[in-house]
Image 1 (cartoon, helix red, strand yellow):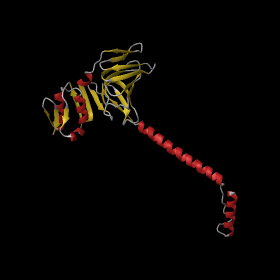
Image 2 (cartoon, rainbow, N blue to C red):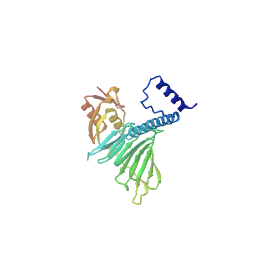
Image 3 (cartoon, rainbow, N blue to C red):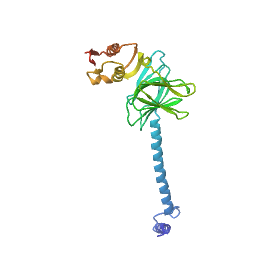
Image 4 (cartoon, rainbow, N blue to C red):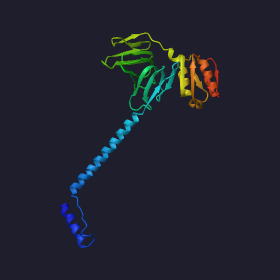
Length: 270
């Protein structure tokens, strides 16, 4: 069937029956050409949608926040979206997504920090510094880094993999071990230290549940709540060389709460 001839016959019939003005110009696009244009439009729409989704995904994954501790005397304690806790020393900056997505949790660090990583069997936690990349699954360790030639990491519990970015060399650091970058840019192990991160702690707009979680790390007895509704209350507070009992007492005083200590556990309530 000749589609173009069919269009010509239809046009002649419409003119004969005076259904259209012969002076009007009708441009008849060949059928094949129409199909090509239609296919092109469909392809462009599909590509446009795919590009839009891709860009949307990139924008979502690139919603980064920068957490900086400008307090010269206190450690800034921050709980991340996945439940991991970061203790930032003075001058330290952590850059991370608002929400972790995909099969990894990646952040970057400048300065010194202690990390208490929430366990994620299928979602490793990656910390990037100038000289090395640190990979963990769930553990507690601290990192000291000032520039591309300075790095030190101590593990309180768990296992950490440290990779030297310049050479690809890596080393596994276990509980009680410390690794540092020497003057020859080699990774070496030595003793560790953690106490300075918990002596002076500052919490900014943190949930009470997150603060208690941190205090429980250094408490010899569990701290719990009589009412789970109390966990979501937010507070900004600083502890300078306080005992566990003093920290709990100060929290309760500020939030107008009470606590009981029965020698086995500390219970916070109204």
